Amino acid sequence: MRGGFIHNTILLVPIESFFRDCGASISREFKVPSLPNPGFIDLLIRFDSALIACEAELSPKRVVNDLHKALVVQAHLLLIITPNAAVTRSCYRKIRAQQAEINHKNLAIYVFSVGTAREWLKNCFLLFSKTILPQKTKKQIGDIPHLLLKKGQSL
Image (cartoon, rainbow, N blue to C red; front, side, top):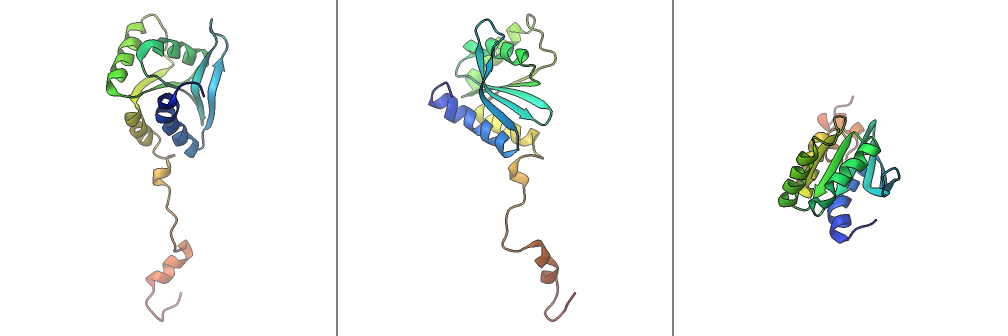
């Protein structure tokens, strides 16, 4: 994957692993050929019927380009992951400044720091996250009625 350690490991891996655990199909560095300069979307996630474009940004410089790439692939959601709240606010301001020029009414845009993004994903995709999956136990489900019986009783 293009980008440095912070871009790939710190920002993108938690998001990728969350969606992979939920059973989503993930494409890394998805090429968007129809732009004047072909670009790449860091993570293109197909989750049920939703198409999610996920971009990691260390500064607000390329946020407008990220928006164009998400519109070209007709994503339903653009998720921009940043390292901290200051970059998040800068990215948000840059998107708001471009809002009048770019028609993105069918595209939901969220800009989060990596920690906030993880919490938001857990809350939004609660039914799919592995945090609510039952944990493996030593006792089997069939053993439960026997545990409720007193010594000497049978079913």
